[in-house]
Length: 319
Length: 319
Image (tube, rainbow over all chains, first blue to last red; front, side, top):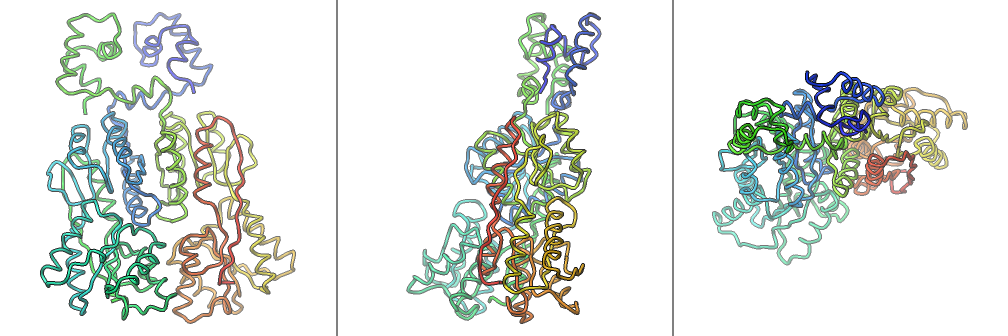
């Protein structure tokens, strides 16, 4: 690919002369100007858009940090972000991190180097203090509840939502309630853990650490969840499953094993994915696409806002 | 965000003076140089990475054109691409097109303007001749069989694969076989249609245009597929369903309607998604992540190659 240096070499002039010719600068000898134009013609040189970005200080690019691209939750979030990006004539740079901190840092570094105008962090592993150091380089938007008023965010109140779901299971007669998480760290998981701790305290229920099952992301993880509770002397009678994918995997595995849902095991999923509707799973609806839309709009807005989204219990047949 | 123009204004010098100071050019008056350095210090100016790209002629960015980000097929393809991008220190720009041609053109335009080094087109709506016009600006890789030797591609031979699946259903005794597609256009769909046409000719089966059901992408589309075949006077006894998502939707709807699979309706899905395994769906395994990996490697390679991937029938319980 021809660049300004190649042109300079071909025309036998300095790089700054090429730059002056490209920018119609007056002080260029006619002879050199013609040599540069000839070189440009010869190699079909297309003015580099990076030169335009350099002079404007804007790239129309927004970075999106996601741990995984193949989980329906993040796919839908990305869809909401991408549709807005299209409407506002922005492009997205994707950072698929697998929750590896250095990959999040790369995204922050690109913001610092002005290769993106702003950054949406859908889920993170690096700490908030580190993110704050990059705030002066452009807007950073998070998908979790943050106290810092310098950070924009669209989020669901996972403490309240989790508590509501736990109370619902309690009202339905359940006293041994467990839950599944993707990972233990992360603001959303912390909120859920803290809701659970307050819940068992409120009703003076025993605290059984085995009832918290982590590493649950995919459909395939459902069978392991069931196997692990089957191995317990006092298995939970109900589970909050923070992904409909995992909940669907549990339903399918229980069907195979002839474990009756909800009689032997009650379930509440999260997200209200199409698969939850298809399998009749009671779930907490999260407006994922709408959250994606807000995240994008916040990313291109100078004003810093914090938007709480409603989550809604959808009663179906698994409780 | 401060750019070179802002610095010039603050230092009360010309833009080219700022540029010379940034590049350590010798012919700058000391007084002006100090003014620029003072301005830089004042606003914490970070040298724009776009300036670096401009001088290198490379961006370490690869564009990825996808119609949808929320379909598991494309999510897995993107995962394969993204993992390789990480390994080779590239970033991805995502173009979610919803099959709108102008959005594909934008991606091609960005290649022309050198905002990306190369382009991966996972599925397209614009014609091949148009894509060929952009080949001089950087590598373009397709995910379909192409005759043009200037285009790199990783693909599955959908003609052969479809024929093999049709033959399998024929051997199992089926004579009324239908199939579902996402859209009728697109190379992969054309190959499938042409395999089907040759198949019914080979066995002298009647050609029923109702047996081709289009617009099938999602889990939710399964119920409509079943409803549409229920409305036929002579419904097909077997379906090739070109997405495991749709096949899963069909299985779930049939369970609800007490339609026996495979006795009343036999099914072969495509992809071998986890949901196919979960529901025991006979399917054609497509190595999606591996395809994504190849697409990326081809995108950063100067050599043009064409890689055919194997698809494999996985026998389960729906035929």
